[in-house]
Length: 234
Image (tube, rainbow, N blue to C red):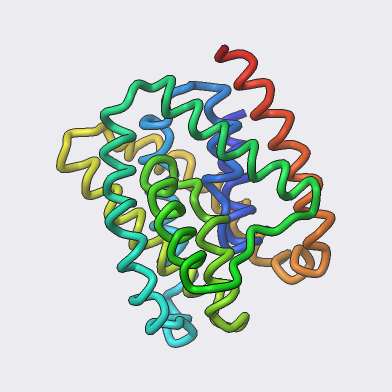
């Protein structure tokens, strides 16, 4: 089951350009309900596959907007990382399933998180940064802003650079504070995640053409899983 979930996370990450953790972690927590166990493994995979994807595409990145947005993303992301390591596990798991339930309903009802002005942009980036720091599930919030400010041709590559920076900061913090990174587990699961990653790369255009249907199906899955998890917790 763990192997299938990491294959799924790899598929989503490369197929959509984001969401590997947001759509994978809620399922993984059913197997073992400690986010701090899964996040270093997810982070190792994200660093590996982001570097693999970006090695020939760095010239298709909107560096100007990336630098501007990081001013709002990085400080709350660091606060989120510290919260992950210091808050009670029940609070963190509840937060993850709560935000996942929100995403699920939005996708199921075909509603988009959108922004119409710079103040909303900044709010979404700040909150998305905090959620990403806590659980790596802040992608949909930040993507809503990037879609409005980055041209489509550069969007996926710019997001991959953003994830690489955020995960690097998280992994460095984990290592500095003595959190077990589970490198061997990550390496063992790498070939499985690679299968999902390359399937996602091959089906990226097809997913974009069927975006509404894909999101509704996934949204329904997230609503069911998050609802069951919160019912079980309380």
